[in-house]
Length: 247
Image (cartoon, rainbow, N blue to C red; front, side, top):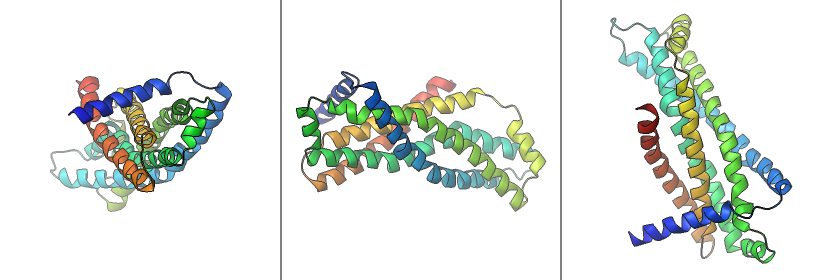
């Protein structure tokens, strides 16, 4: 328990350092653009592929679980839409990014720590925490909602392809289902969750990398811890945010 509280205190102290004494805005702009490509744009491919198959599986499973003739077939499209909007696109995307982006951030900053590059920045009078971490946080907060919207669109499209190809639903019924009783707030809810998850992934992973002590072996361990802790916190905040935003 004492170790947990110590780590929690160190995390908040690092965040305080990240958001204090920033460098020149021009430096941050260049770094943020670089991070948006490295952490955001490079993740579009994996998010697109996973979302397509995720939508396909949700549609087929919904179809096989609503074979009762009492249920109208358009419910398949509605079920796919709501499942993707409310849960899969925000949470599953965040868990994927925790593995891909989180490990990258932890290993990059951890390597800089063990090779004393961070110490060199501090000696030059640069706020290393702000310089290294803040652009990553800004980039993920800006780009992750775009990834979530891509995931929603591709997931619903994947559901349409799978449903019509397997013959479990007609194209007209599927389109009617995804339009039926649509609640725009669900998109807002998904974006709000995405912003929280983006901050968790970036800050927790950066914290693990920034506080590495030792050599390359410890960098690997920090990378693993970043993914595990980020994933657990994403699932925890998923429950909390669902209760706060949908109740």
